[in-house]
Image (tube, rainbow, N blue to C red; front, side, top):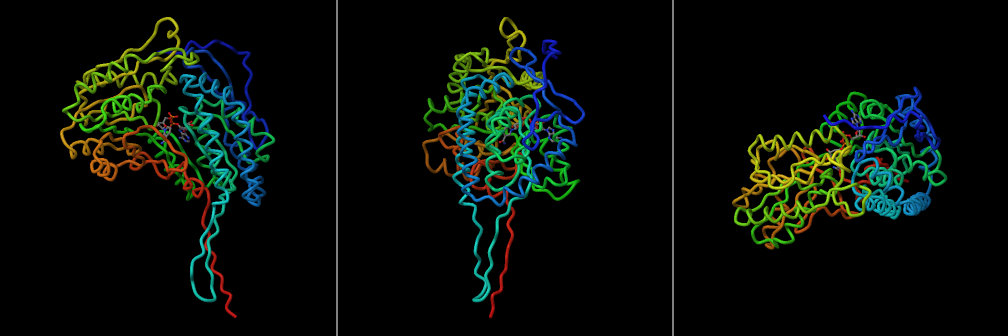
Length: 492
Ligand code: NAD
């Protein structure tokens, strides 16, 4: 295993987390170290929150939400709008923190803060749309619903888009009148901590807590807290299932899950091939080293066009520039940590063992500027067996698996024959094929002649082992409320 060459920087001070609007250290003084994955440098130290710290955040959240739920929709909207403006002013600095924490190129991570700003503004604009229903009952009775906040909710987020998730995922819970606790990944916590700081004086005290720490301790304590009844998790399918089980062992909780994917990109022979080749490269998100839930990591191409398609794609992929994530010209950076790096390399070995044909990448970069980081070249395997591990398992790295198909049913069988069902993409000029595929594919989000695009206001989420619940639209806002039905008799 490649290890990081961290500087022995014992003088590094601990950046505090945020509990109920106040800076805080872990109750037992324990900490987590952050390492820059591209350089191996120790960059920050922050608290590893304990169960007692979770308790303190819940207590503060309860007090604050008791007031916040009485605020008007306009007041909640104004708070989110102010926060969006402050984030926009600090976008560059926030992107720099994420680059140093997760190794993705600066020109990519810069977009994340902007997406968070858009999301905050979107939910700010929706607060007046949080409406119940009036249900006809009888002449002298009325029945209506109230959508009420939970109180204190929690969001546990992954490493790949640290700031975007931290900031955009507080928008719906706050807009709906809740207090929110955010638990960022232990690998990428700094931008979330900065969010806690930027929110001071904007978000009422106690309403937002940022708890840093490890998943099996801090995350687990959040999941187990009896007064957090609403949990939203973004991360791997295995962790998601563990969280469901733990939550259920404590109480009946509303748990939504945004999990992994092994997403198909299917190209029919009538497609605009040039566009499809570019999309296959873009959809794989090599720009984040493939570390994206929505990556179209299975490329399924009609046999008639397969050979030329994958050759052109291989050439394009080989042309991508690996480099320091801070360099503006870098197109693909460092894997996030040693564990993930070893996982990616092990899947490249598995690809060889399973008889797939490596046609691009496959190497690690270990010399010169790459010596202390986790760099793997964008990789394309051809002729992958659809039943093989390379085609079935989420790698969450820059490894694309290509395979041919012969007819519509064959393509669909390959596309659907995995445990996941997050996104899917289809390229065809035939309207009937496009509609049939969109209807038949087992995925929560489908692109036709397009890839990777998220549109605010449209519901994103997975089926099968890719998750439960929908985010990024009004559904997410409503999911942070509980409907109460009121039946009123005003008979004379
Ligand atoms: P992960 O599951 O290892 O960790 C995610 C978060 O959960 C981290 O904050 C971690 O500390 C915490 N955690 C870990 N174990 C926990 C436990 N037992 N209890 C509570 N919290 C716990 O995932 P990761 O490696 O950070 O991220 C990669 C995964 O996230 C991939 O599978 C990817 O597909 C998925 N993802 C999904 C989406 C989506 O929208 N569907 C978006 C981004 C990433």
